[in-house]
Image (cartoon, rainbow, N blue to C red; front, side):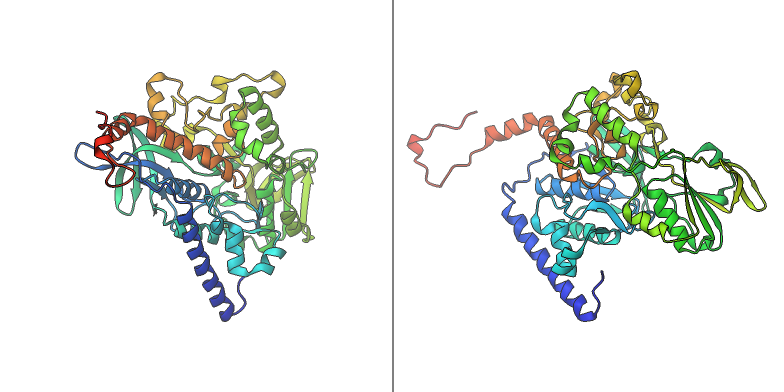
Length: 488
């Protein structure tokens, strides 16, 4: 809902300016104690070492930085390969009209009321627009995240791609590439806030990979939908992302779209909706392995269903078919397109779209290749009952209580303890967390408290020495003859 006139646009801009001023005042009210407290670390030649490097400046990265900023943790930086305001999937490959999350959510605001999405939306569009809003429009979520970034003045470098993490003495070296060329950022802590595919990669079935590349795409990729006008399109998968892409093809004028769901029945249960309460989101990571595995294997086994909005987009087209209980196996490419095998016999399509999700495997991540053989997975730590076994989920990394990787080999333990996994791969250890919006309010404080605890603990001697040297008094003119001498 954009402002419908220049006057409305100016009024919205004025309201947003007023909101930013109010947020600044609220931050000041909440800003005690305001002492920068983290001991700075430097290399022998005087180069500053970052306290926390966050990889990814989307919704999770912004939430982490805003919370660390409130806690006066200096020496933090986020990097993102995307250009400014292009972080995350929202402007590139996310193709839903609205988020699958209630409009009342919070998280990136770091507890500052005027930096909530609700306050931002009302300032931009008005009270009535908020009352009429059902779910958050996708692009408005992007605009809101940019507002939070501006309000907190977050330290973010865009156009910087992480290539590899390696040890550097007791620190970590992040080898990155940008328009400046290759460089190395040294950090005490690295947080991988890298989204849905940050724990592995997008899954494409082998029989699809064998086809010529111009005949298929994954939903995670840029797709030239305009070129699908008049084409016969097959969509593999029946989750929300798959249906969003089916809708895009139909809206671009595809001659037909057939969407294949292998399951005999559609899965209507939305497990994330059930999980959306404080007890679960805040504490599932505190439970023992058996309960964590039981809850999360059940939820991830269900998969997330498509949404009402996605169904409304596709069901209005008479040339759309949802084929439940049918697999679609590409057989061969020919001059007419791709011949596929289905329950109804062989058919030919001009283009395939794979909505086939992600696979979790840290060995697929170039930034972790130095540590690939050292990271423990769930299958290394827990053996579920036979009726709960799932090899796909067993490959998730087994994380420490601070979201850090744990080591199979003792030699890598000290460095892995400083690499914190805050992407979809954290799901088996902490439930919905780094790659979801609903839990940010609960899981970001857990992560940042672990970071600040470690930063404090690592320099306890410095803090002790600082306390011993502290000579501050309650007021000037303290009666010297009655004062005890300072402790040495």
